[in-house]
Length: 383
Image (cartoon, rainbow, N blue to C red; front, side, top):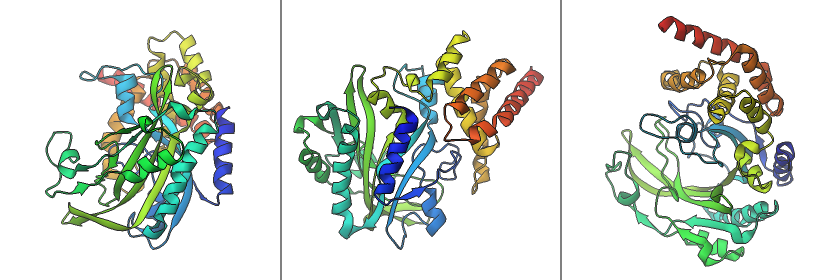
């Protein structure tokens, strides 16, 4: 199935279910200070209610959201002095995420209904594309204490209180009910299966369970989708989280990366063979560059960021975060500044043509070329 048909099928499903179709957000969002949007980016909830957690009504939405995962860009494409590049045919740094069974913020009384529908719906959705149920391997949270999973990257505890999170029995029982075998459901007591968002934008977000849905391919296990059920409200005092309590609502949401789903559904071995990337990748490869993977992904990231901000990396709420983003953005431009102008023009033209659902990619090509030219001139002056 081509990407345009895949997107259409997903959107039609959401319309039939009566979900609120939410427009995409910028990949440069105040929710991700110094970073770019790396998940579905529900800032529209804040725009409506001024909060992500004090919400007066239920919400039922569907969204397709461009994301940029900088850590994946470094790990799988760019590398660094301390991080060697890991070649992996299933990773991108810039891709589209979509809800599968929608995003639902509902009362606790409605939780069981929407949760069960999400577990059933996500498996039905994936198998409708020909994925085999016996090839799924799914994680669930077996229970753990906050002191075991609440450490920062430096290894120190981030929270001065203790809390015991129970086993996620609901997930295990639900996956068994939809026909999976117990051997396919694997315990994982890490933060991969229990989300503790720690947004430094000043707003608390609910905590809760997460399941990774992996699929066995000839290349190994591929993370194809997730389901989350967030039901705990952090207690914040003087800019610190000092405890958690039951939220009066539950956030149930499932999602998948469209390019990765397309890769598996079409039996492709490399994600750059997906039809909304392959013509660009083939052109870049034909030019004889040493690292076509890096060049291709740099084009896709630069095109997206300039289409969203014109190149200033400023979001609508916290302009002081732009400096760190600009460092990342300049690193992408550096990968492109040695390419001749005709080659660049063709690359960005192809990228826009194969992603017609984002017309801003075409209208911003002139700005893209100006940004790269400016970076090239600044680099030459420093030399």
